[in-house]
Figure 1 (spheres, rainbow, N blue to C red):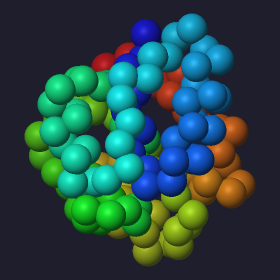
Figure 2: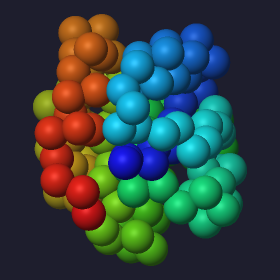
Figure 3: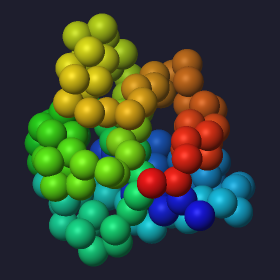
Figure 4: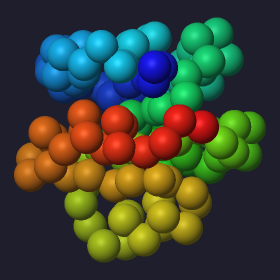
Length: 121
């Protein structure tokens, strides 16, 4: 079972993700937050193995949060899901350890397979 934390400032995106991901009995949503400043506290509390992370949010940059996640939890899978699908962001996130980088507009439906296709960590 994959334990997933959703970190995105859009309540509607979080709800769409919850609806999509709860279709699979192999995924359990262990938390959600709309503020990157709260995300690390939430991670420590719920201990996900996968984080879905937006780039721009209140409380700080998702890219900065990615750095912190990979420093504290190097085995945690991080999936960047954003509308800011620029090659510089994509490259920077890969260099910082993001496992996947998906465009919300064009690749939203790939999130389920992206989580399930990777082996458990």
